[in-house]
Amino acid sequence: MLIQLAALQSALATRLATVEHPASPTGRLLTAKELAAEVRYSLDTIYDMARTGRIPVAARKGRAVRFDLQAVRRALAQ
Image (cartoon, one colour):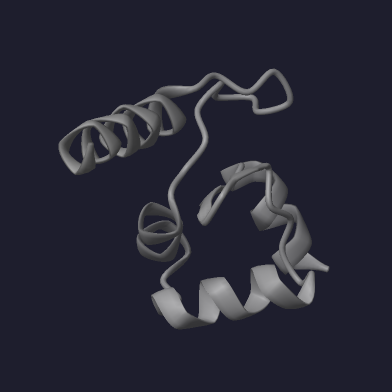
């Protein structure tokens, strides 16, 4: 049962990483780690800004969150 759960979680994470988002110009959503590298903020800062609403979260499934890079850049520019 535990092995099946781990396999399901892995499949979900893979799916979320490759899901196309119609509102995203690139069609790809970034993980918090990828976003942190793109905008050169720490991972903790990314999570804090998402939690407080400073940057938009494009998709959320359980604990997994994904971000649209262009939407985040627009929010940070304000």
